[in-house]
Amino acid sequence: MSVFLLFGFAALAGISLFWFLVRLERGGNSSTTILIVLWVLVLDAALYTDPNEVPVGLFHPGVGADPDPTDDILESAISFRLVDLLIPIAIGARLYARGLPERIRIASVCLLAFLAWLACAGVIGFINGNAADLIAFELKAILYLGIFGLVASISIRSFVGGRGLLALLYGAAGLATSLIVMDGFGFVVRLDIPLLPLPRFGQLGADAAGIFVSLGVIALALALVRETGRLRLFAAAGPLLLTPAVASQRAAILTLIVSLATFVLVAFATRRPLRATPTEFALLGAIVVSLVLLPAVGGLALGSSDARLPFEQKVQETFTSRGKQQSAQSRLNQLKKARELIEERPVTGWGLGKTYMHYDAGYFQFFETNYTHNMGTDLLMRTGAIGLILFVLAILLSFLEGLRAWRRQADDLAAVMGLASAAIISGLLARGMVESLFEKYRLATLLGIVLGIVGSVAVTPVRARFEERVKPDMEKAWSSGTSFAR
Image 1 (cartoon, rainbow, N blue to C red):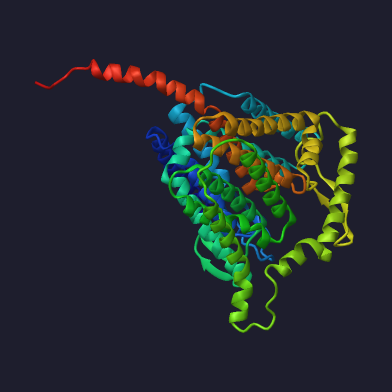
Image 2: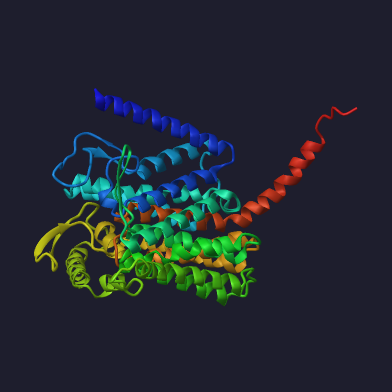
């Protein structure tokens, strides 16, 4: 009976959320839906370091008995991620309130074709006898990337120009600062709160670092062109961009390096006037240096006898530890085995849910897995050359649209969001070469949102021309209306 009550409560909550989002759409607040999803990603990643160890609660709803009560993770027999439920409800609300979009870009066509082929790969995997649970898990990439349609169909002005995005950036910066300090001092909070259990809050994970870096790039981009509030944006960008140094993962640091390199090279290679001043850039540097030095200085002030150079242990763990070396060798073994499978079915792949055995140099034994720690190899193994080509086309066209927007668009906010999106895409793509991005629901959803931002930026001139044509007609209709003045 309790299971039926839980399902009933979940259905009621889902229906209520659906109508709430419909009201937002009809009230012209479509960007709020995207901000809600972003807040969910930020809080989920900040509160829970490992995406595979999120306990049952608000961010991991589920019903049924724990399938493995012997481990330390509180799970349910049937469970979902919060974004797994939020995204389809949001898409349904958008379609119900506004219908299908009237205009679609070539990049969107390629991405939709890729998502359709991903569904076909699920069928191929089922025919090949691949594990049904893995097929269902890998199919969720359609959901995460599919959010691009929600973002692409909103006005970038409404998304960037309001207070919602600024509140997200400042809130994320506050969380990032707290995690940097807590992680630096080794302070961990453990709370058993109903619906929000916190087993290890205070540790900064790799997913959180990736999300924070992306938001830091957006904050930095807005600081370049906004007329007001630039100091606050630079102050927010500092801790957000510093988080990969704390996360102890090479993939997160690679994301930061590639994103920032792309952003700086494109921003300053183009003759576009910037409003940011050298003093504001100096503030950004001062904030970063302060956060870097804080754990070491704080340790010395408290009389610690083992105070070390800032992030010395993090750097050693990230680049020189024995575990990292063994991990690199294991990944090479995975790539070698996966390439053998790819050569057997290079065009269509083996379908979703395909697994293989590889030797793990760290554990000195063989393991069965379904991914290769390389997004390109994953796609070739699962979807073949067809899927990889469609995905690369969608990413490449979106990246070029972002660069084109920075060079050509008259609207500064739209242009700088195009630049930021291109930089974030390059960083996530670089990370995808050393990590299976589609297995990370937080990062896959982030990629879908960024692709949608590029789509919204790309059609900004079209929206502006449409509004210019419609505005005189509306004014004419208003002036010819019945007057009640005497």
